[in-house]
Every structure is written in structure tokens, then in C-alpha cells.
Length: 190
Ligand SMILES: CC(C)(COP(=O)(O)OP(=O)(O)OC[C@H]1O[C@@H](n2cnc3c(N)ncnc32)[C@H](O)[C@@H]1OP(=O)(O)O)[C@@H](O)C(=O)NCCC(=O)NCCS
Image (tube, rainbow, N blue to C red; front, side):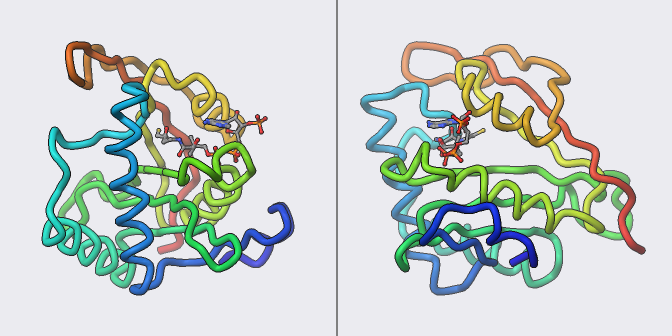
């Protein structure tokens, strides 16, 4: 975790880097979004039409973990009372020595529903952005146009709105626009 990461978080919440043993908790958080989608079609995360298989999830997590080890991704994990309650990832867009876009990171964040609104998102976002310094020059994210509170949070961290992707998500019988936001971090140390 970044040295100053613990100072701004509520008691009993710690923020740390990803561990291999986080797989089950992160998978369960993700799968609960599928249940949540039933009652809240505006849940602001891209999901598949049907839940991924266990094998799909293992492959996804292994890829993420490998990316962290190779420096192609940063992950900040929120832990409260020993339980993983949220994670924020920033993954390199098109890694590789020949890539002209490798200085861009793409951010995703999710907090387990019972812990939302308690400071977890703010803490893991802050930590992930600190980890991005020297690694990415620009961080981008997309947020459902209906997710006003999330957009407000990103604006507080210096993300600026750069455009709307109309009908980006087709969920059930409706389309949802997505807004693209970016934050310039600075040049990497290389
Ligand atoms: C968006 C999300 C990551 C924010 O994390 P969080 O832990 O709820 O946020 P925090 O408790 O740190 O609150 C920080 C700010 O986030 C904003 N916020 C966004 N969504 C919120 C929510 N559902 N509940 C509470 N605050 C929310 C508020 O502006 C809040 O500011 P405030 O403290 O001045 O009210 C979280 O609500 C979540 O996982 N939502 C579902 C998935 C999602 O929408 N992910 C974002 C994809 S772009």
C-alpha cells in the first residue's frame, strides 16, 4: 500500500495490493453483481448476459494477477475486518514495447453492496491512483450516465468528462449511455 494510504480511511479499513488468495472474495463480489442487476438494472458495471463459469473466473483472475506481477496493472484492495470489500484496478491499455498507447491505464472499481457509502471506494481509488504515478500518464474510465454519484466521486479525484458513448450498454430492453472520463497523471519514470 502507498505510505499515506491508511491515513484517510475509516477505522478497520485497510487498503493493500492484490494477493492470490483474494480470488474467492473478488469472484463472489463480482457474481453478486449479477443478482443485483435483477433489482437494479443500472448497476454500473459491464456484465455478461449469463454468469461466467468458474473456469472463466480463474482465467480472468490469473490474467489480472500476472499483469500486476509484470507491472501492467495495479490493484488496490479494500479489507474490512479481514474481509475483502472492494477492489480498484488500473490495467495498461495495449501493453507492449511497440504500443503507442501503453501509457494509458483503464480503471475499474467495485465495492461490495453492503459496504458502499462507507468510504471504501474513495480509499481504494486514492490508493490505486497513487500506484499509477510513474506508471501511467493518463487514466481513463467509463461510467454509466445514470451513475451520478460515481461521476461525482471521479470528479473529486480530478477526472474530467470528455464525451458520451451513446447506447454503450444494451441491458434487457434498454440502452444505457456511458460517459468517458480521463485523468492526466504525468510522465512515467523511465
Ligand atoms: C461507485 C462505487 C465504487 C463507490 O464506492 P463507495 O464505497 O460506495 O464510495 P464511498 O463510500 O467511498 O463514497 C465516496 C463518494 O462516492 C460517491 N458514490 C458513488 N456511488 C455511491 C453509492 N452507491 N453509495 C454511496 N456513495 C456513492 C458519493 O459521491 C460519495 O461521496 P460522499 O461521501 O460525499 O457522499 C460503489 O458505490 C460501487 O461499487 N457501485 C457499484 C458498481 C459501480 O457503479 N462501479 C463504478 C463503475 S464506473
